[in-house]
Length: 455
Image 1 (cartoon, rainbow, N blue to C red):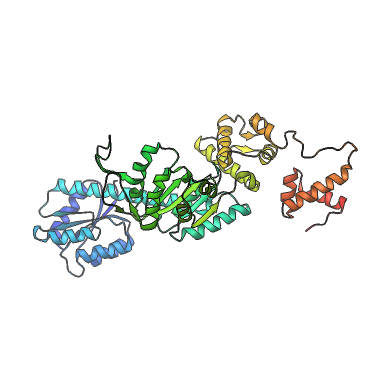
Image 2: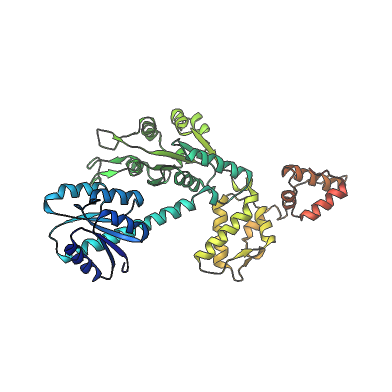
């Protein structure tokens, strides 16, 4: 807090000197000028933490100075000094963004207290801006891990829809990263400065979820001892993420439909609706079309939610991303555990590539965290992997062919397997080699041996 630069702007030299002296006593570096024009020149060159300005000054008065300061630096902290008769003007300065005003005459302790408070708030503003920038960087699509074709398509579609206010329905199995993608859409949208509010529609009892979503009036039911804002009101101006939307009871689906149609929220126990401006992103691991056919989900709500559907592929359909994700999670939990970066060898990666991952990315992340905690050498090998993973890996002994009684031609079988793997990997030699668990040079040798055409 100390050593911060404070700029004092006042055409009354004696008052300016008094303020400068009192603030300097607290350890701050003080610069002073007599008018707003000089203040702007200083502000543009120096790292000023706080401006203390009079309102009535020649050349450039306090109100116009505040306008120019906020234009250059929207978070500039300003304290206004005003005479008793010009309080209305001081209030105008507050509307323009001044932090506080003090009226003449003021005592030194009042001045010091207001200065300290303004600097503390200024630090919070800077910290919040830094944290917001960090969050936006974290959830940028460029920083999301995964380069498989299916994930590239997810990023492309998400980046495009983020620019609009369209309702999004994210589809995918549990553990595929639906909430992470929802945050990515929000923090890449025009609403990124506003709240991102999450609610899991399947985690709350049916008698509580209505109040949680839409809020309630005091006395609306037993235990409603005060008014409560629902998630939609808390998300006003921003985005609400409705996770596991398929679990929402039918009678609440009607109320959600109204929010989507006209932006009106019906609070429990309140006769008048509340207007909200909220972007809705929903997610589910259910097949909502089947739920509609079975009468468990409203068809009109489904079509309102499914303006832009985005399908997140399960991890078993994006095997190319497993090495990248594994390295990312090992790095993340190594840093969190304050240990040297834990790595993984090729043999262990092969096991990961041949596992079905029913828990998807979440299961892989949990595995990475466990291996970092349990690692003794800093290198993950097959011996460090759970027995379940090895046993359920397709390298664990399960056969992909049946052997006829009359015998087989091994070379013909090998050629057929290579050709099928090559086609499955869209004729990418490196991917086909990884799929078969051999090196690319070995694959090329087999191509030449069996006369397989390279594409």
